[in-house]
Image 1 (spheres, rainbow, N blue to C red):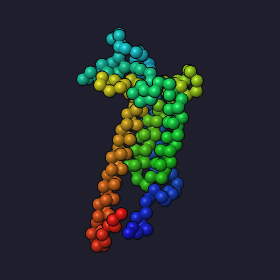
Image 2: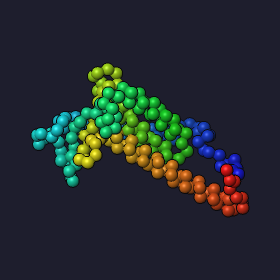
Image 3: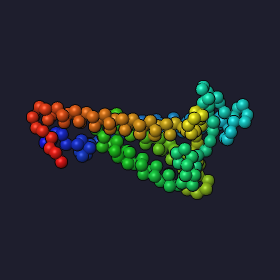
Image 4: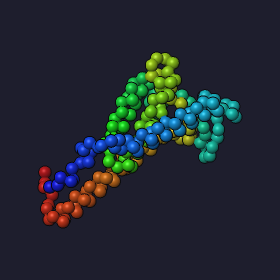
Length: 194
C-alpha cells in the first residue's frame, strides 16, 4: 500500500510558474530559431524543384535545402486541413503549457516546451501566410534529406520532443516499478492479485 508521500506529484498544484520557468524560454527560443530559419529559406531558396543551381543548396549524402510550402498535415497529407490543424495546434499548445506548469521536473517541462515551441512555429506560418481564409497559410519547409519528407526546425522540435517525452515516461515508469519492487521486498508485502 502506498503512503502519502507516494501520491502522484502531478495531482499537486505548483506554486508560481512551476515548470513554465523551463518550458516558456525553451519554447520561445525554438519559435525564434524556427522563424529566422524560415525567413532565411524564403530569402535564399526558390520554391519548387531544383532546376537552377541557386534554387537549392546541396549538403552531404544527398541531403539539400529546398523550399516547399505545406498546406496540409505532416508529410504533406491532408492538404485542405490547414485551418483545422491551426486550431488544433493552438489547443495543443495551451495544453502543453499547462502540463509544463504542472510538471515538477525540469527535463519534462523543458521537453514540453520543445514540443510547444514547434507547434507555435508552424502555427505562426498558418496565421501569417494565410491567403485563402483564416488560418489557411502554408508552412515553410526546407530541409530535404532525400529519403524523408521535407521539414523545418519546428517539425524537428515536435518529433524530437515527443520522442524524448515518450522515452522519459518509459524511464520514469521503470523507476516506479523498481521502487515498488524494493518497497515490497523491504516490507515483506506481496502484491495483491487482481
